[in-house]
Structures are given as C-alpha cells and as structure tokens.
Length: 145
Image (cartoon, rainbow, N blue to C red):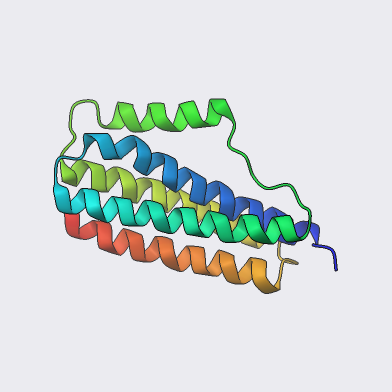
C-alpha cells in the first residue's frame, strides 16, 4: 500500500516541527544556567528526536522522502533565538521564547491538518500526539515564567 500525498505532507510537517523544536533547544541550552531547566530541556529535546524518528521510520517504510531543514531556515531560526536572548537569558525569558515557538508549531500543525484533511490513520494520529505534546510542553514551560 502506498502512502497518500496528504499523509506524506502531514508526516513532513510533523518532522519539520520536531526538528525545529530540537534546533531551538540546541540553540538555547548553552545559555541556560539553571540546572533543573537544563535537564527539562534535554528531556524535551529527546522527545522531539523520538517523534522525528518515528515519522522517519514511517516515511522510510513507504519509500517517501522525509523533511530536511534547509540551511537558510536553520540559520534564520537560530538567529531569531540568539536575537531574542541577546540581552536576557533568564529562565523566564527562555521559557517565553520556547512557548512562542511551540505556539507557532501548534498553529502550523493545525493548518496542515486542515489543509490535508484526507490524511488518515497513523499520520493523523501522530499529528494529534504532537499537538498534545506541544500543549503539554507549553503548560510545563509556564511554570518557569
């Protein structure tokens, strides 16, 4: 059975969002002075990586091309994070930045799910799991504000 285009598009959006989450955390971590927040972020980075790997496995099963972050997009994201933390690297500021990025990913995921409404089964299930994960992350990050 071959993967439908809507499923592939949804899988790629999940990968894109998970990879962005990993990149933001990789960029933020060197700025974190609080040990408990650093540990929390490391755990979140691992969870993003696991989501990315699950989707990649599904894409490989169907011989589909996964999402790859472009160099310009990665530089833009990292530049945005650095600019947002240039003068303030407090835990509260870093948590706000992470919440902002998670909200963007939630919005992008909903838009993709609505646009690719014929996606079903596993792709929709993983997208909904990602949405739940991001909502939980935002709730957890509010404790650091």
